[in-house]
Every structure is written in C-alpha cells, then in structure tokens.
Length: 153
Image 1: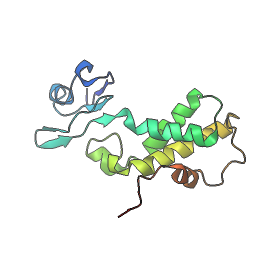
Image 2: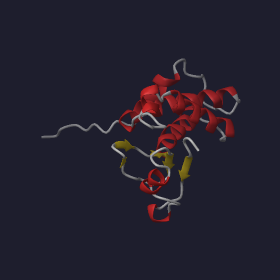
Image 3: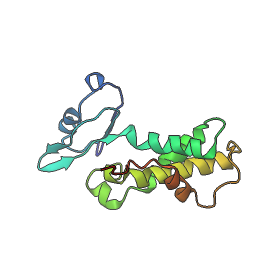
C-alpha cells in the first residue's frame, strides 16, 4: 500500500478505532488519516502529519440547508458538500499530507459548502426559499453569525 486511507470516525476519542499516532506509525507516515475525534498533529520521521476531521462538513452543510429552506436532505446534497470541500484543497495541502484545507479558513470553507448544498437543493426542487439568491456564497456569508460584540464601557 502506497498511501492507505484510515478513517477512524467513532466518538468519543476514547472509542476511536485507532489514534493518529498509531495510524501514522503503522503506515510508516504514509497514511491519509481522518477522524471524528480531535487528535493532535503527529511528527513521524521529521514530518508533521495533521489528521483530518469531519467538523469541516457540518457547519456549511447545515447552513446550506437552512439558507435554501430545503424541505428534506437528499444524498446528492451530501455529495455536493464533500465536492465543495474537496475543491478547496490545494496541491500544497496535498504535498503536506493534508486531505482538507487549513481549518483557519473554516468560515470561507463553510460558505462554499453551504453554497454548493443550497445550489443542489434548488436543482433538486427541494428548496423552499424563493427567489434563489444570485450569489449563494455571498448569501451564505451574510447568514453566518459573527461573534462581534459592542463595547459597553
């Protein structure tokens, strides 16, 4: 196996099928590893490996469902979410062994996922919000909560 894919998706962390360290050690640093639990980056043979996490999909997916007013969720909407995420992974990310873009870009990532999910809901006739926004990414960004508070002092 050149690059085995290991998906340890159980929660909580204590119930995970394996740890990031175990996956990278077993595969001699070649694994593509993603998890449903938080694991710290692992250094193996001088290279830092950062595990993927399923937290990337859910915020944008939920936002896309809400902003389109989808009356139900279709499997194709989940596929649209995963495609939107995949489109944001650069060659530089792959070269570092990452299967997701940096989490520091989660708001941008979520907006693009939401837009793809909403677009698919409209395409499938599942969206109840009319009219369809012209720019779904901007619509998603405008629907996002911003934790900015007034200074009352």
